Length: 337
Image 1: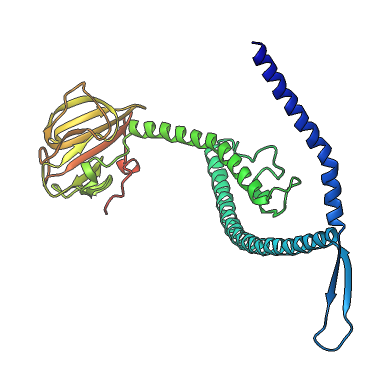
Image 2 (image 1 turned 180 degrees about the horizontal axis):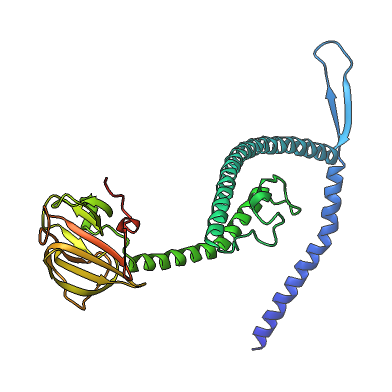
């Protein structure tokens, strides 16, 4: 144990001794370095031609410093020259991108102007349609956009106070207008739906399926095809020049009469809303029963030649209460003359 402790002490003592010697050598090394840097040098420049020899006297430190300074200047020159070249390429690229962006912006402005014109036409048409239908026009531009309450302000090509392009503001205004236009259009849709229900409750379609055939005799004063005498024809005759073509109900209703008449032959009478009735006569076959509810365009029979006729056709009547009216006022398809 004693030997081990003594050995450790010797090692520590040797370490501190070496450390002390090293510290004492530092001033000598620094002094030697400065003495070497202060060594005098003479640089002679001898011209090839006869001339005066130029002498420069300096020391090692100044020479090394000068070499480093020249090398630094040279390296800085090459570095900044490279940076300038790179910057020029970047500027050229940015200019090309800017040119393409400006071209795209011009195209966007053209498309935006076309959109504004289309929106203006839409606004005018919608306002006229709503006025005719008696619906209040709530489709006005957004309240935070200044203007005259319509799209006229879109034609002022200015920039807003925040610097945003006018085109972006126009698109926002058109978007707000179209969102507000949804409500009146929905009201028009509801109105059309109600009108569709109304038209399905009144006789308003061509009574022969597919709109085929033609009017062989109109309503009103005509010459009777059998007697040759003038008489009042109380309906419209539809002919396809053959029997068997389907006859349809011209409105929703309930079948109140199914039978045979010496004059009308096989005939069907349907009761509709609003006190209206329709008669379908001279049928070849009947496909409904009394009391049956039918929908508009349901097949109720086929064209025939029963009763007093000169050929296969459909005799069609429209009654309002006890009055017989001209069916042509309710047939929506164009009739042949």
